[in-house]
Structure formats: C-alpha cells, structure tokens
Length: 477
Ligand SMILES: *Cc1c(COP(=O)(O)O)cnc(C)c1O
Image 1 (tube, rainbow, N blue to C red):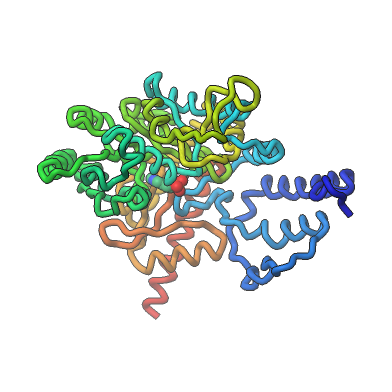
Image 2: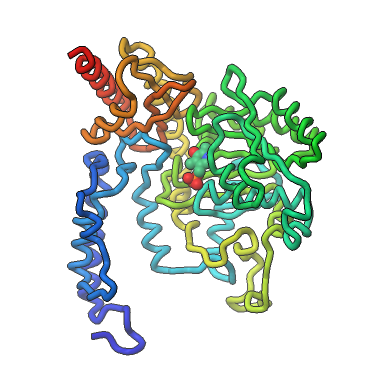
C-alpha cells in the first residue's frame, strides 16, 4: 500500500525499475523490427478489452505493461512501416522515442517561467527561422501540428490588419475578410476561418494553372473584386507541398504580388517546408520562403519526430506576441526566480500549459544532423519520381498527375482504386490512400518515411499491378 504523500509512486522502486526495463525492451524490439510490422486491423473486441468501468481496480505494473504490449501496441496506424505511403504520416525515429521518455520524466510545463526547456524550444525556433531565411525579427512557437499553427498565423495576420481592437471588440467591429488559396489547399484553412468567426465562405479558391500552381492573374482579379466590395484581404496562402499532388505554389512570385498589394503571405509547408533540406531541384521549390509573413510546418510528418509536433513561424515577433499576450496577476513575471525569464511561450499562442515537444525535435536535429535528414528527404523525392516512371511504363497503370516532390498519384486503368487500396492494406504489403484527381479515383502515395527504399517502391507497384490484373479478371469472369 502507498502512504500519504506517496500515492502514485511505486511502493518498490526496484520492482518498478525492472518492469519498466522490460517494457523498454518491448519498445526497442518493436522499433528495431519496423520493417516486419505493417498495419494490421485491430481485433473486433478491442473496445471491450480496453473499456474502463466506473470504479477501476488497479493492475500491477507488470500486468499493465503486458496488456499495453499485447493488447494495444500492435494495433498502431502502421506508419512506422517503410511501405506506409498513405495520407502524409511520418515514420518516427528511435531518438524521438528516447527524447519523449526524458520529456515525460522532466514533466516541464513549457507555457512559461524560467527553466531549461524554454531554451531548447527557443533554439529549435531560431534554427527553423534560419533555415527558412526569415528576418532577424522572426520568431515562432511549436504547436500540435500545422492545423493549430494555421490558426495562430491567421490570428497574427488579422491583428496586423485591424490592430489591438480586434482582440477586445471582435469580428463584428470590423469589415469582412477574405482568404486566398489555390484549389487543392488543405482543409485546415476552412477550419481556421470557422474558429476565427468568419466562416469557411471567406475562403476564395483560386484556380490552378496548367502547371498545377495558383493562377496569379486569377488571384489578382479576385483580390480587386473583393476590395471593390469592401472586403479586406486577410492573407494569401502559398501551398508548399499540396496534399493531393505535392505541388508548390510559386512563393517568390506570390511574395512580389503580396508586397505590392500589402497582403500577408502565409506558407502552408506542412511537409513541403522540408524540401529546404533536400538537394536541388527539390530545394528550389521553396525559393522565396524567407520573404513571407508566416509559415506553418510539421515535424511529425517528414522530419520523423514522434507525434505530435508542428511549428508556427512569424516574421514579426513583436506582432506575434501582441496578438496573444495576456498576463493576469497570477501569471505576472518576476524579476528573478522561476517566475522570471524573458521568454514565455504562452505569450505566442493559445495554450497556457504546454508539454516539452521541443526536446524530441532538438534530439532529432542534433542527433541525426541536417545532412542525414536532407538525404532521406531527397531519397523520398527520387522514390516518388521512380514510382511515377514505373506507373507510366506499366500497361495497367497511369500516372494521374506529374510528380513534383514526394507525392505520386497512380490510376489503375481497371478496377476500383479504393478496393485495391483496401486489399493491399489488409494484405500488409503496402498502404496507399486514395484521392480524386480530375474527378477520377486514384491511389496516392506520399513518401515521407526514412525507412523506404527504391525496392519498396518496386514491390509496391508490382503489388498494385497484380491487384489491377486480378480485378480485371474478376470483371471478365
Ligand atoms: C497535414 C497537412 C496539414 C495539417 O497538418 P496537421 O499537422 O495534420 O494539423 C495542412 N496542410 C498540409 C499540406 C498537410 O499535409
């Protein structure tokens, strides 16, 4: 039995140490056999197995860890596997796992105050700003992902447009706004407009050119029409790596246009931001990114940091802080002691209590180094190109759109793409997701996994070809 003042710590630390070492071994076994562990479906009764009664009887650490290892751990999403190409999901890394263990042990609240975790996050943000080539005035904050970062960035854009009264008087005191993004932009912009109180109708979807990029003439015309109608342009979104096709809007041209129009330019670089670490020609896709007002990107996708972690960068840190600063008496800074410190991250976002996400990022950057990270980003782009070549050469597949970065969409000439994707997921061979390109269903691969090899690409394409042939035979029979 535990005693007062010692309710949750183990009664016997030696026993606990042993149990936790065993669990660590299980985790290491899983990490080191990532290639043998594709996604597989959870048992039908899993909900029952993990359901909690109103009054819960405790389990011993050994029993608990066994259950976690056997009943929960195997039923992950499978994105640690090298042939997981679905959606855009990062593969994680061993150093990231180690850092998570340490971060949980420290249990720092990174909303504010004067402690070590703040310096680690500051360092990560400064490194990011440097990589982007943003001005000295830039800063930012780590977030749960790009969706959250987008809300922060657009809030800062709004503060710039309307000033401090937007915080007290709200949207009703100001004109309507409009936001501009190319067709195929991520749904996080609609959600952001919803929570900012404008509604998703404020999103102007700008058509694409033949190269799959935002049509700047159409953008300019739409801005003029909105201004004439008394609507204030809030921001233009440059998509750096679109979900469907991996295409990049021309950031430098958009920067020229937005400077001339005096409109905030935001980059959605959820995964595409990391093309900055790749070799040419992929690194050129982000040319001009240092001139923008805000950037959202994810560490949990292409940077293999364990879920979750993204970042919001803003070129004017003072404006960023003005957008969110709120210090009631119980949060006033002290001149010294733990309540001191020049940087409180709660001043740069919505969350007051925040975990130590920065450690797993810092460990990833410091432990692997930018060359190694950039090398597999380049590999993934080459692999997408290879997949495109194989699909083009195949008699049962077509390339649904040109391969620009790490995304490849292939269309089976017969059969249902969604049924093929499901069969290959269930067989454990490869996970594709599906999407529609020009109205037609296709299999979509987004390559962001450091474990993927060219052989994985060949194997995956062969499996798709086999399935297409099977489905066309079934159709004949
Ligand atoms: C994943 C993604 C998002 C959303 O990011 P989350 O981290 O999932 O919130 C936004 N834009 C693009 C292009 C994405 O790929």
